Structures are given as C-alpha cells and as structure tokens.
Figure (tube, rainbow, N blue to C red):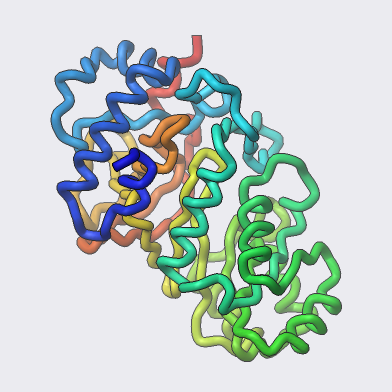
Length: 323
C-alpha cells in the first residue's frame, strides 16, 4: 500500500496502525526535513532509538516562522501563510502537492459531515479573503466546488442572507468568529436548516469572550441549538471539527496530546490542562509533529478542547533553533 493510501485509510481507534504510520513518518522526516533533523540533534535524540510514537519530539510551531520546514527535494506547489495577527512574523508552510491537501480536507469533511454534494457551503471569511496565501480560503473554495452551491461573502451580509434564504439545500455557514458576531448583532437572522461553524477567533477585531458565552450569543441570534467549530492552522494540513460544546474530534491520521506548559518534554495525562501537541500525518512533506501555542485538555476518547493561548507564545525549546 502506498504511504498516502495508508495514511488516509487509517481507521479511528486502530492504535497499532497509527503507531506504525507515525514511526514511519518520523523516520522519514528525521532523514529529510533539515530543520527537524537539526532539532533532534540539538535534543540529543537518535531517531533509531525512538521505538514508540509517544517518544517522538514535537517541533515548536515557531520554526515555521524562522526556517523552511520541508521534507522534499521537489519545489512546493504552494506556500501557505498564517494570518499574522498582531503584526508578528507570518509562518510559512510549503505544500508539496495541492492534490494531497485536497485529499486530506475532503476526506476529513466526509468523515464528519458526509458527501459535500449534500450541502451548500457559505464562507464568511473577510480577513482571510483580504490577504494572500490562506490555506483556509483554498480549502473552503474547493469545498464550495465539491458542494456545487454556496459561495464566499466579504462584507455583504444582506447578499449572504438573501442567497441563503433562497437555497433549499442544507447549509453550512463557515465564518471567522468576529464576522459571525457582527452578523448576529446587525441582523440576528434565524438560520433554519443551517450548521453555523466558527473558526479563526476574533483576530483583534472584537473582545475575546469565553467560548461558551460566545456560542450562546450566536445560538440565540441565529436560532440554532449549537455552534460547530473548525480547528486548523497554516502549519497543519488537517482540520479537527466540533459539533458543539467546543469538543473537537480529529480524522484518523491526526492525534492530540498534552504537555506541561513549563516543560515541553513532559507528557501530561488525560484530563490535565496543558499545551497542545499535534501529530498530523498528512503533514508528510513538512513536519508531522507540531508543538502548538494553544492550551487545552485531552479526553479519554481522543477528543479535546481548546481553552486559549499560552501566555508566552515563544514556547521554550524553539530558541534552540534560532541561532
């Protein structure tokens, strides 16, 4: 079986298959991703001595800002960039194959929401549409095409609501959080037959509210029982989804663990609050083992919640790579 077929054929709960795929990916990237190999050398980690997935070190996500995190000799088809909120240096994620990226997000979407052709997808993503290099815009654009109906809307809230009102199909309204809040305040439309999905946070445009409070606000305005969420970032190829209550679930090739916020190499048990680490095996061509700046909790069934960001965003360990 080819590696890509093995990744996207993983079955949720098959720990042995995930373990094999994770170790194969780790050894491939230890050999071919220069910045990850350098990081392992600085940590004194011999890849041949790593025999379990839980022993694999996670690369601090800041490496995508300062170095090229890439595992291929061929040039990438695209380079996705982070939204660069707050004026910091943007992360850059080289994507070897756009077809690979599309396979990842389409497979994950089908896992959680079924055939895209059964939906209309509406994207309310103003800050993403106003810049270049957004992986989210690329994903939503291709999902809209797979749905066969829907569209992007920038600030034309009335046009969005008119189009949705005429659309007989079940709908997903995927919006950046601050834009959904603005839509709720200005129009409070009752969105029958619609999944409301938020992503991306406030981007400095509105005050940050506790997630439960923000979701209640949207539920009341839109007349829906729960708010779905999408969790992704420029440095990842895959996305996790929440069908409500802020509890995210991952596709089978993605796994979350939690570390101590003061010691990035200390794995914490299920239920403990800590920094979020992610194995995303679809990051085949960059680095699949990412130490994020998010903080949250992992549950026994592999689901997780995000509680916010680590106060000091430069996670200890990344300074090893900044010479």
